[in-house]
Image 1 (tube, rainbow, N blue to C red):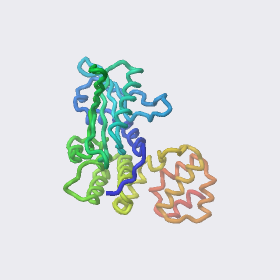
Image 2 (image 1 turned 30 degrees about the vertical axis):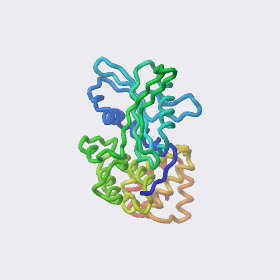
Image 3 (image 1 turned 135 degrees about the vertical axis):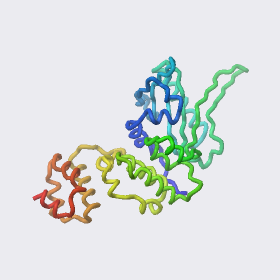
Image 4 (image 1 turned 120 degrees about the vertical axis):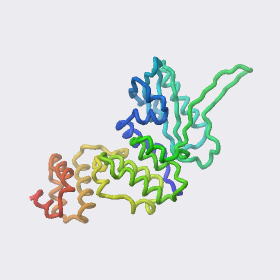
Length: 290
């Protein structure tokens, strides 16, 4: 299995899934949340310069009990010590700003290469005095049966099925099946997010033949990429998006068409993005640009 790993690879994906159905994520990670009277998202942005933003933070009111649910999704698990320090720092930060009890969960997406036993507990003792006992729940996504997500109809987790157990089929069949599941969903963003997870995890040669461009193009995320560093809304970037979109649809564009598109305002650029799938051929585009 070939991987392309880097810190925070899936941060944007998790944030988008969170916006779509944060309660669904919470209920899958902690099933008892199904009985909660209220689940509300909390701010995850930290004021500490060297700390990464938390993946998921929510306040839960359930059966006369209130607590904070904190979930971290990890793809590059390096060591128990490093992760425990990071989780503990998150805990102290949350506790500093909110005095409610905190339920922490670590979801390990990719199986670590150099850590055989993932730990979620830490005890500190000095002079026979128990100074600290710390614990968080560990969920290993790669040990979860991916079909269980389908049984529970947890659509928000469909893109993350890419990481889950698939012993009965090989990698290419697994990729094809994961994409097939999201292909028919009304919200095409799930297809886009599944492709993003797949392409970060496998070599391009393994997945590219299974990706259907006509479905991918229907996702709003395809039109407005969320990769770090992209400033959305600027005209030059919108032009590049339109040109890329049209090139994928019709092939290499004539220079005269490129020049006309570059001169369009934001409104007309958006019109092209909205109607591009309706254009039967490049002549339909030329009529619009005339």
